[in-house]
Length: 104
Image (cartoon, rainbow, N blue to C red; front, side):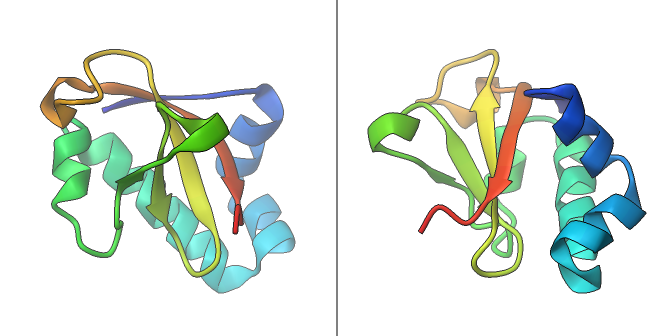
């Protein structure tokens, strides 16, 4: 899949292992990088839905239309589809990483 970031700060953070490690810790940083690599390797969002450890799920409320993938509890990567139809994950091939947060 093609991946973009919601802002330059988030992009720089996700592209620098040391910055990720400083902010989230070594284990969480490795999981974030792994999940981003899985997103890049996938053909579409349906492929990610087949990875049990990612636990892809659609969000509701003010995040309606967005998806989340698990990293290491309680953190998740929030994704915004930039193409396709959210009803058919096979059509979503471009996503934007909106944030890495604990929204619970």
